[in-house]
Image (tube, rainbow, N blue to C red; front, side, top):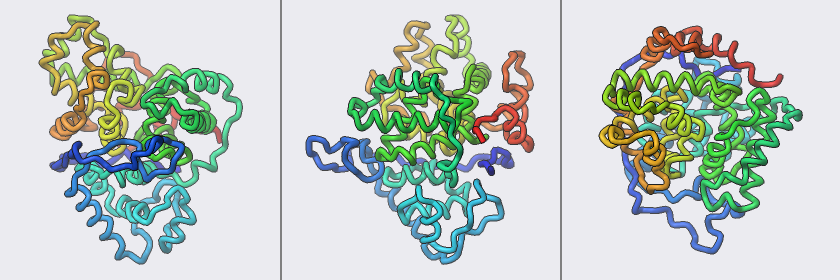
Amino acid sequence: MGQLQCTQEEKQPSIINRLELDYKKQVNNKQDDRSNSFSYVHAIGMYLNVGNNSKLDEIWEEKLNSFKVYDEPPRTQSNYRNSLTKPRNIEQFFTECQLMTQDFEYYMFVFFIQEKQEFKNYGLIGIPQKYRWAYWKVITFQKDIMHKKMDNQINSALYHIQKDINRTLISELFKEGTVIEKLDYVLTNLARLYPQVGYCQGMNYIAALFLMVSGAKEQQTVCVFGELLDSSFYMFNLLFKEDLPLLFIIEEIIMKLMQKQLPKVYNHFMACNISPSIWVSKILLSGFVYLFDLLDCVLLWDYIFIKGTVLGYTDLILAMVTIFQDELLTKDEADLSIFFNFQDQKVKCAEKIIKQALKKPIQDKEIREIMKKTNKKLELVELFKLFGKDGFDKQYQKYSQVIKK
């Protein structure tokens, strides 16, 4: 199966002028007693109160409308993903790709495979909420995921899912029986599709966030999360599999970059014996959901979908430390877990973090250099010595026998 490649030529990043949302201008939902319930059908992502930016809406609508002039199939030289048949027209596209249901999703799909880097740049500028779930679906698209063979022998995973599922209270919505059933569906199907990963605590938070953005579309949520578990660009199978090997790689990358870029903070953390497992792991394994405001999590996930897991998380976490470095220099180990809980403090900081991340994004070669110099005996060191180079995908497959054929 084809994968979204990491082996792209290294170039200087384009300057991205990010557009901010106006949080005072909220989408006006019907205010009946259960207007925000999963039991009702709403438009994409209407469970989250989101800000607006008319300029952002305008540039996206203009761009997507520009693809309406094409009567012919998308032109691309690459063998895209699952060897998707090039649709002769929009009707054929919807017949073959039943997870896509809106005309604008078709035009967004054409945009992605014709102008992939421009598609990502538009996402970094900002994604209107009405297009967000479509954007996430397109950038992670797998045609045949729901036809993959499932493993029914996942008793231990089912036990842990049932144990965690009622504790996934990222919103009042997740006290509803209907919502719990949908989350159960997502996590159980992921465990059956990817039995070598099964279920790991933290996946429930990420799946719950995706469900909210999707508008409670559980099958689509399985497909989007599935690509994270089945791609050399996202590598969530290596993040959530037993022993969490990708977690330790990202922790090593972050600490080495902190030592180089933020030496005062790094030295303070070392003096206070503050391990990355105290703070980095909570962010990585919950996809920011455990510690950040939900809307902030959505914006941060836009960045991760575009940049991939390793570069995305690393950029965002380093940007966060950069922004709050003065405060961090006053914190000890006991203070740190409280400080990073922006959700409890009702602090919104995603836009600041993303803008800081865009100023100086981490490059593939920096990660390769860290892996070549590290003296830690980490499982994936040899793999990440090839990060961003030809040969990475092939080597990744050796570490990643995830799907039961």
